[in-house]
Length: 289
Image 1 (tube, helix red, strand yellow):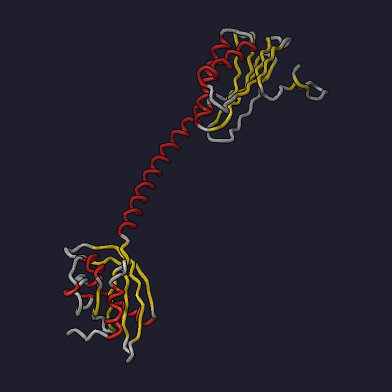
Image 2 (image 1 turned 180 degrees about the vertical axis):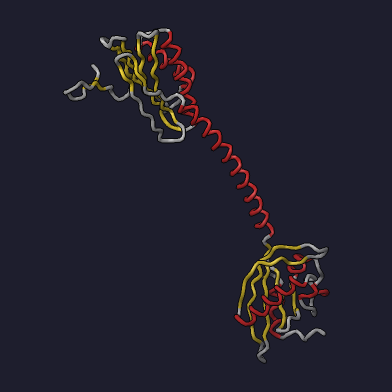
């Protein structure tokens, strides 16, 4: 049996029909007294099949109806409440909505629940798309980290190891500031008569700097094996970078030394790198002349 529509509700109906959200008004026992046109569109169920019934008519699943009924009672007791729900639609579908319920009192003390329902299906689709995108990003990040670990291992292999060469001892230390970057060092013996020492720093850090550093490294090995003078080696490297790699804001610095077997002579060449220092027993460090 449908209760008589309260006078205040009759006055409000034209306004409720203009809202963009679905509206449902029920009495204290839970009988539905009014739904607006938007609610009809959201559910696909004509209001004539809804008004006069309770939520049992919409929720054919007992557990869902129990949640709705508990929410309805809580809203009446507390005056208001808000929650996400799945609204049943015609054909057995479920529409994600946010439902806000406010309790009002009639002139004779009776209680009514005014519920507004906002369709959040687009938001849920966006959230799902975002979760899928994040999952893809995590997978890509994992692949990048694996590639970086491999690249770091390759770059560490370019770091020279300390060793003895006749009366000379070469000590080295390499501590990268980033996973990979553009620094490398070179210690190479040529025909057991000359020792080549070289350090290089490519601007920036990351994959691009590491690739450039490896290209310069391979070209340096080629030039040193030709026994070219160090100044010529540096000029060749500079030309190589300008011709094939040069980019605005990119640069590299380099310092190289060549020592003969007896340690009597040393050839030195530098290009933008901090000056090399010579330390002799009992004397202060001095830059290479």
